[in-house]
Image (cartoon, rainbow, N blue to C red; front, side, top):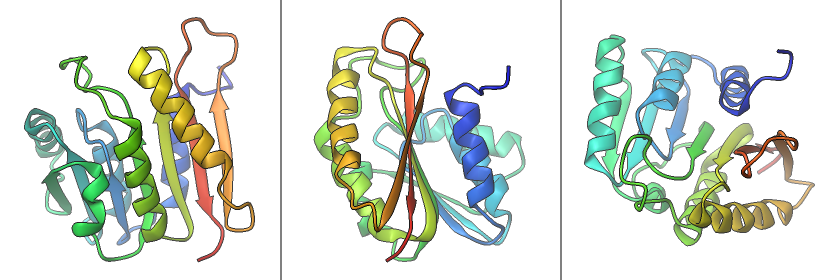
Length: 188
């Protein structure tokens, strides 16, 4: 298939945006797939912050990275992603958010639009010029639908002189499929 699904496409963008030794953020660690990709991209000299409010998610993420032999460059933060500015004080090459719930976890525990917008705003401030913010949205459930609409409206209002915003998703799939908002910071 020429057109990648949402997560492979997101990972391709992240790989192209991150170099060795850079600092990056996984705002929703989940099961660690994004964190592992980020850790591989920044290498041993880089830094990854992995946030999640569920300790179970961070344990699973740490185990995934330990199995891959990549651990030293990752800092695990058991806190809401909206508090990221309290933990990160350096420019980020990229930030990724995979909104929704922990795959395999409690589906009643979902990210919320208000805290997600605060996290996205904080990440944009930290993003260096040329940096990438990737937000994967899941409108297929009610909380996700509301969150996706709120985040998309927020992104649509970003000034085009400072940010390029891409919406990538399949429009012929059933049940409101997930999609990506990719935001490139053009200038400080």
